[in-house]
Length: 436
Image 1 (cartoon, rainbow, N blue to C red):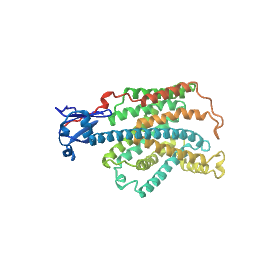
Image 2: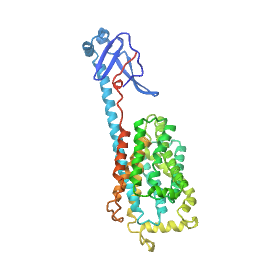
Image 3: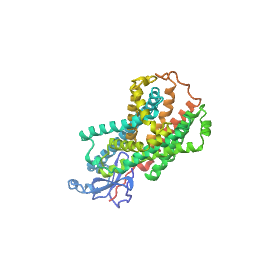
Image 4: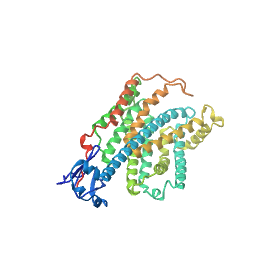
């Protein structure tokens, strides 16, 4: 740790405590800690302690051994502070690692169960999307109500400005609309490749709107993660050929859809940061963000229904009959339930896991950053590809692993390790100089 102040006193004692060194003027004894928002370092300000008179002139004498005895309370204070800071840092890192692992598991389950949910609803994917959207609003607001009654969510949290949530809903709706439009024209193998634009957009947007600066190892790690996913998905799939067949317009439209999604995650991070200031250091409950964001997303989806239904090849005039038939298949009742084996269990499992994935993703954004959440979500791609090669219910024996799977997964893991690696800050970080 390095002090904000580097002026050396003319005379005084020198105290050592582990790796921490204090240079103290004769008239000072107690340590008071301050923090400057402009430079993230620790400043030690020394003031006259109430027990200074007890030691008399001992404070003015030099000599490490004698001064160490007299300055016992002062050394203990610094030692406790350093120990507490270390524990908080370790706990924080452990929390991020656990949250990232949960996000990866949920991401794999989300991808696999979406494929399984489409087995009974193969003719009604648009119905499944709308069912999930409505389900989000009902479940999220139910949880929010329970947490409000438990005093976890406060009136101050609920009174947060709603404009950012409106923008979140709009971005999610636009991301869904453009993604559906491009996805209808692109092959399944090309979409994961184009999805790596999501990570690039997040880095650029966090650089612009959050003022975040990334180290060389972090940029290199993100680049390797994207390359690893592309190799894992594209090897042997003919994705490059399918991209040429689809044309540049639809590829660009898919990249734009990931821009909307990246802006959505960065905006949520900004909401959490601003809420910390407005709540005077408090933390905004993530179900406030999820609930209002999902409500406004559902509103904009309703406004875009004529456009979205056309993308799925459903004339808007026939949309009510389509939703009715989709409901019958989902409930697995009536004459339309033929070929709907697995419903409603599989679609419900997908919706539940998808909600869990969204919650874990938002929690990871809250405690770390949007880029870290994106890396965790990206890591689930090769794992899901491997899971699809296993014999799964309703899917049977899956295809073999792509030729470049192992190489791509290895590059992806190396990229994550490089991103997480923190270079040594040198000896300057182990010295604290206190000023008058």
